[in-house]
Image (cartoon, rainbow, N blue to C red; front, side):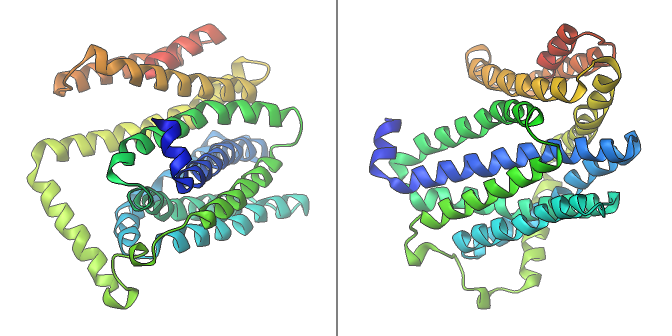
Length: 324
């Protein structure tokens, strides 16, 4: 079934390969920002600042990005974002080579890259129903999910290989290359002209964005359960992001001889665990409920607590498995 879809629809090949390249670059640069910041500052607080700069854009522009992605020429937007991200990310490499790189430049570039991601991700997702028929959509969605999750395993492994070849700074060079590849592949996608946009740019105003968000906020406010889950999830994800992006790295650097490599391997292990768990969940729970959510949160918490008391690699791997 999957091979038939790929064989009959060349757009799907370019779409999936572009997603793979872009996601791989994001994983590599995400590690690079954290590694380079700690290498420059040797400060947990400054490293936390970089982690926050990667989260805040989605809180500020996540909804706006989704609205705009529905209105504009998606293919053009995606290519433009990829091409903008190339000089942004390479500016870090250039300033580093000139010995002019400072902490605040890392913060600004990290923030801008993830701001662009707020618009890239929904636009990329919105292309999928345009390039597929209703019969193909389920298969392509499954393939995209497989590619995305596969990159969470492959990315950290690639980073370990790169560590033994080049300096952290060239993780950014690698990221710029993936953005270029992504832009080329997206450009190869053929979209019917009539489906490029849902509305002409001249037909909407900036105020319409906030009106759409207002209606969404009103709806969420009326859904008590969803509102509570949203608030709790935001809090959990925010603190969990700090734990695995900063806290775990600092602990590994203090307790293992090759902290960065161990950190990358743990991320790869986590990605593999995510894939396995998601495959088995439908066989264990036919219907997810609030009790299931609470049970999962409890196991998640135990995993994070265990990481706090881990000083050997086996315990780290067990704690990371429980996290998922």
